[in-house]
Image (cartoon, rainbow, N blue to C red; front, side, top):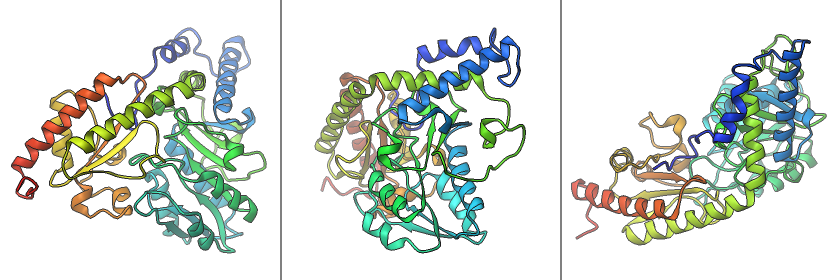
Length: 385
């Protein structure tokens, strides 16, 4: 029973079928002039249109990358290099994905100043804090659309409006939102936006970066001029086709899927909090992704919780999949005010469109059984006294 869709999602069968010809018969290089190459080029441009459509962009504003991490790096490092003579200040948040967080830390080591905005208990950036952080040296604001661990959705349109008024580039990591909630680059006032295929039932190893017309950044790599010079290298046509198809399917079913997932999420949250003493929801109750529920349990160790749920056939997470092998407490949970001991007792469940109400019922029962089992073993548990 898969309950970790924020980490990755299975490839949709329709997506897989769309990709298959481009591994075999239609294997051409899109840069070549003969028919095999032209077929690949046409497939790539059709996929570019599908990606552009899901975020309300123009096809010329879509750059294909290897995924969200590369897209984030191109946006942040590309801006820093291009505008280094204009300023050296970047604003981000305390709960960014490592693809953004670590990139900003790298820039800090190389002469740039970075302001990390707090998110408070609800896990949401406050616009007044952003306004106070802006200086004459600010060249970039990069705030994620929704958090990958606690699912909280940020006020991106408001942030983007302020950035535009100040003439500051604004980038958002929308890896967790594209295909789950409405995303429109114009309404969100963003200059750059990152997305990733494997979060919306497409293949791994492919993503895209939206770069608004008129935005000027430096490429990170140099080569044959592919993707308008921003991302050189022979294009991954099967992956690109898969991403395009995944975006097309998600666009068609966005509203109905969001409604279904929200109902399942709310049922899960209500039942888990009701049936488990001293359990809590991390992040804002409603301003969160329709498929995300992040809990913490007193006197419970997260890794033990995950392993015991795995024995019951449930795949879930203690936090970000990119850092699940680390023993440190999640920086996201610490940022919302949890103590390290509390953060270590977290459980992230992220639902997918294939999950059912029966799955929720089974998961709720399993969580209750595992929590009771682990608490009986824990010297820290005194809730039954």
